[in-house]
Amino acid sequence: MRVGALVICGGQSRRMRTSKAWLRFGEEYLLQRVVRVFTGTLEPVLVVSAPGQQLPCLPDNIEIVRDRVSDRGPLEALATGLEAISTQADAAFVSGCDAPFLRPGFVRCLVRLAVEADITVPHEEGRLHPLAAVYRVRVLPVIQELLDAGTLRLTALTERCSCRSVPGSALRDVDPELESLRNINTPEEYRNALSTSGIPWGD
View 1 (tube, one colour):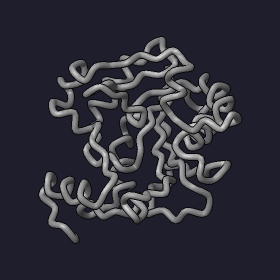
View 2 (spheres, helix red, strand yellow; view 1 turned 120 degrees about the vertical axis):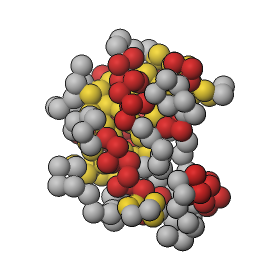
View 3 (cartoon, one colour; view 1 turned 90 degrees about the vertical axis):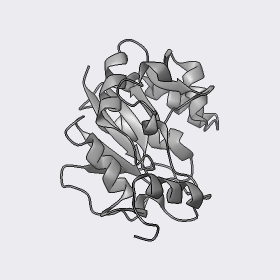
């Protein structure tokens, strides 16, 4: 199975109140950091952004695609990304751009577990993590049906497709604290993530 990567960064970031793609994280921006994790791990790597969205500089081999319709959330971004990657891969590991602690070993482990199911998704503390999951391209028709019906929840897709739920315990060998599932949605979470990395606030 050929597996690429999709990094979704076109959300409105209402709780953060600024674009998460442009959050500084040491010497790089958050989007650049997540793209770097995938580089050399999966190929190709595509970034899915909103129409007209400005992005930090990315390597020349990173393809940027734009949501076909604005403001339809990660399900729209998933449709756009899977369609774009479908000629080069059978599936994609999908991540938001707000996952500064995503680890290559975590990515590789989840990909190894994505054998038969349409979706392979981590499950920890009573909930799924659909923005740290592997999606097969063949789910595209179901995504379009959901979008046409006005359903924008990613979890609605897991309810309609064959889904392998991977318990966090199966991933702790490669990520003991499951930091790969830690994302940033608020200024407080951003400050805490910087503190975890030893980066002073404001750098």
